[in-house]
Image (cartoon, rainbow, N blue to C red):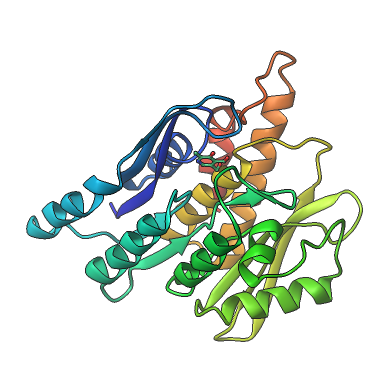
Length: 278
Ligand code: PXL
């Protein structure tokens, strides 16, 4: 069984970051190690959340793993809370790198044209540098625009514009970029990716549901990372991740008493397992 590492915070309640990545990647049949960067009572869309920064522990944990000769087939990162944490992730990539290891970065920083609480343009630029050290990055339109220092492209933008964003994202230094939340036509939503080595684009779209939920980016990136680690091609991994995310939203809205802070990815697990076999 492959062993992978997920680096991001634990938001105790809120269905995002590690409470999403750990169950999804484990269910996909991968040994999932974690490096929690902080512990929050909830994610930052709640009011009055508590925040325990674990930055000071990260290097000692990594040093112990190095001393034990523990290695990973892939490292995925999500929400990172500070410049120092970005720097430590760059060191993790360097210290644990071996031929074939996948470095997967979700620059989880914002959505709908806005950065999350606590982030600014400088942080977004710095996250762009970390993206340059990855093998694949999966920003949404908001994160891509902030990393490139562009205006957020309000509304539906053209496929030509998406292609130019993708080219500029790979110019940050990563060979592959996948842009999420792309809507090529009314009623459709999904992802378009560019592989700068082959010069090829691939895309996958599904039904656009008339709702928006927190945590869907983390569900997408966990499933995409897991699918790639399970050996799916980029094209197949994007399909797995999009369909699983859409099914998680469907499961959420099927229950009238659903909460507002996250999606019911647990009930969509059977579909994830089926897609991973295709
Ligand atoms: O879903 C991304 C995410 C992860 N972690 C924390 C967050 C968010 C989004 O707001 O606040 C702490």
